[in-house]
Every structure is written in structure tokens, then in C-alpha cells.
Image 1: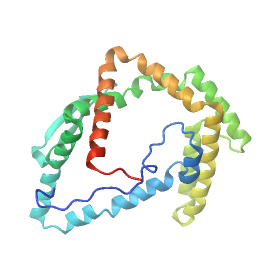
Image 2 (image 1 turned 30 degrees about the vertical axis):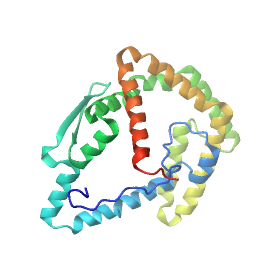
Image 3 (image 1 turned 180 degrees about the horizontal axis):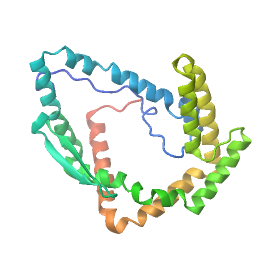
Image 4 (image 1 turned 135 degrees about the vertical axis):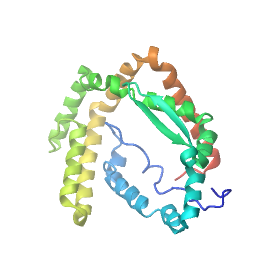
Length: 246
């Protein structure tokens, strides 16, 4: 963007620990004690999005320069159209051009290959998700988790139910009682993580998910391997370009 005559700021709002995704099961009690289910992190990201300096900078430009900024960033109407077929049958598209395309090419080598592989690998859940949730080994572990939570004074059928209840409570309390809501979120998340660790729910879920993914390897194994390879390649290249966050 600087080569095109524009300023651009990196988005380094979140720390490395804050950026960690929270999946269906998480058993890191210390992380839960600090961040709950990530509600405060989401709020922080939303505040940053609304007040990001790039948005203000772009808005300060003249209409002509703003159009040039957009063209430099993503290629505008001239951007290439990437497409990928999802495992569930739908087809998705992405326009990619400008500096965004240059950055993706630097990281992944072939942005189109990455787009196809990533959409396939991350879309496999549509094929096995229901079987996984009904899997006997997983449901047994979830029941054990629920019993553990009940002993802690919290009655939830599964981890998703706990998170849904936390979100509803946060919405009910509103911004004026955000501290109270976050304290309740942390208490539930800590109990959740502790019970997940006590019942080995995370390892059971991971093992059963691997089982179902492996059943799809004949058809999708190459895409999954490509996704993992290009993702690791991009990470290694990124570390050499941008200093790691704390």
C-alpha cells in the first residue's frame, strides 16, 4: 500500500493468547479464568473494528483517492474471481486482487489453491458433524462432563448449552453490568474447562473427529493435506515478515 502512495496499519489489537480460537471443548482452566469464553475479547475486537485508524484514514481521502485506495487494496472490479466447491455441494466465490492478492501470494504461493483447499478442509464438518455429535463415545463423555458441571452447581447438557446461556446472560445484563456478566462468564468457563479436563472430553472429541475425517480421506485427503501444508508454509513465512506477538 505504501508503494501505491497510501498509509496502512497492521492489525495487532489482540495478543497471541487472546487470538487463540475457542472450539467446542476447551480444557485450559487458566485461559478460561482470564478470558472466560472470549466474550471480552470479541467486544475488544468489535471496538477496534469500529474505530480502526484505517477506516478513519480512508474516510479522510477525497473520493478519487478513496477509489484509488480501494483499487490498490483489493483490485476492485478487475480482481480475479476465485471459486471453490464445498463438500456439502455449494459453490463459493472470492474476489482477490491488489495488495491483498500480493500478500496472499507471498504467504501461500498460489492463493487459488489455498482458497480451494481451505474451503474443502474447513467444510468437511458438514459431512460428518451430525454423526460426530451422535457418536456414542462422545455422548458418553459429554454426559460425564454434564454430571461434573452439575456437581459444580451448573446444569448444562453440553458445552454449547453453557456458552449459549452465558451469551444470553451477557445480553440480559447489558453494557452497564458488563463486569458482572464477565465475572459470571469466567466462573462458568472455568467450571467447563475443569470438567472437560476431568472427563477427558477434549481428547475424546478430538479422537472421534479424527475418526470421521479419516473416513473421508479417499475423497478429500489430498485437499486436507494441502490445507495443512500451505497453512504451515504461510505461518513460517509470516513469522519471517512480521514479529510475533507476545
